[in-house]
Image (cartoon, rainbow, N blue to C red; front, side, top):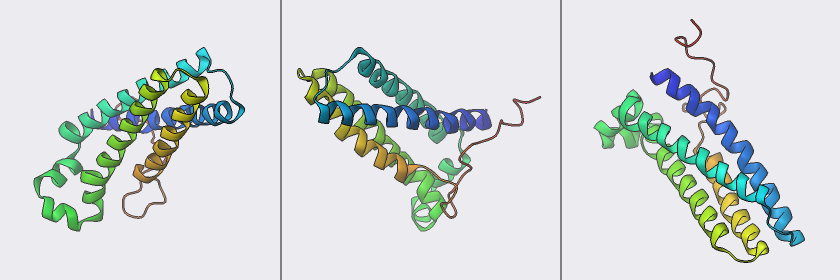
Amino acid sequence: MLESIVFIHSWTRWLIALLLLLVLYRSYIGWFKKSEYTKKDHIFGGVLLGLTHLQLVMGLILYFALSPISQAALNNISITMKSTVLRFWGIEHIFTMLLFVIFIQIGRIKTKKSKLSVQKYKSSAIYCTIAVILLLLGTPWTFRKEIGRPNFMGFPSGLNK
């Protein structure tokens, strides 16, 4: 089960990243061109938020129930703080990704509450920009020494039998 959730969690990040870039692009274009906020923009923002919440649930299941790394990190904080790997998985990744979810949520709320289209786009652009930065910082990219994971996880061994 751990492998399956990690696989889904890993691939969902790419859907979120692509949708986030689409929402970000449309937000900046709409903001600077003072365009009318469309139903499409509303749908893209809603789907981004929904996928983000799904990702959060999977991440919390991994963190609190399935991951031996996060369990090891939670068992001894003083050792965790001295270990690059345990500190990243036990503290940095979850903290950064929680902030990511919070900024996506706040951006969505502000976008929905705004009356003017330009304000909707502006709110979306600002909060999505912050979310992109957090996503880049909190993701275990392949090139990150010690904590890197494959950018594209393969099928878990139990799924291809």
